[in-house]
Image (cartoon, rainbow, N blue to C red; front, side, top):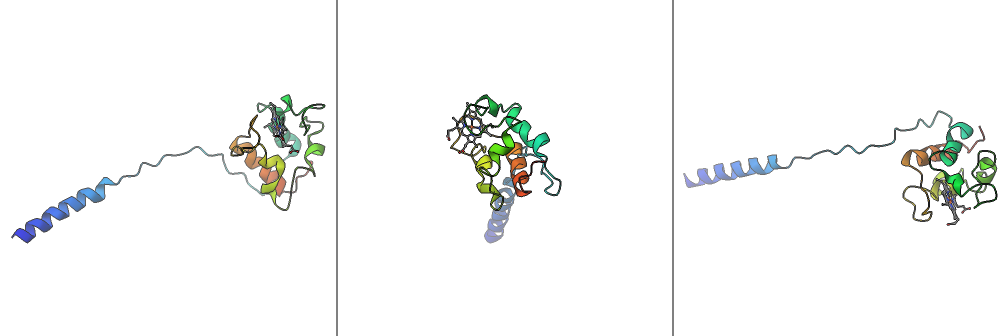
Length: 128
Ligand code: HEC
């Protein structure tokens, strides 16, 4: 009798124990994935990362701090000096202002900006 009570008690405790672990899944907003097969356009998609709300050109302008990221000069400033098409992740233009970079304290890319730049480099860093 005693053993059966003990087993019943342990079973009840186990049931409580097993049901007490409930995970709350937190949905972290992530940048929508970029289709690597669709060409990323330098003039239409990459340049606005520098000249738009990030305002990289506040400092990186003609006659300012290198690289010159103004629409007219950005491509020649970046390619080939700041890209590595065989190891895209190591490209300076991708790394330097990456959201997780510790090097460039002034301004960082958003996760979506960084992803787009990486795909553009992997596609050959074209002036398209
Ligand atoms: C407030 C001024 C300022 C802003 C805004 C700024 N930068 Fe910079 N950036 C600098 C300075 C100063 C340096 C050079 C010092 C250094 O190497 O750490 C630099 C260096 C760099 C370099 C390294 C160049 C090389 O040849 O090593 C890159 C790439 C760069 N910035 C990209 C960007 C991008 C992309 C943005 C916009 C997201 C941006 N910067 C916004 C001031 C700025």
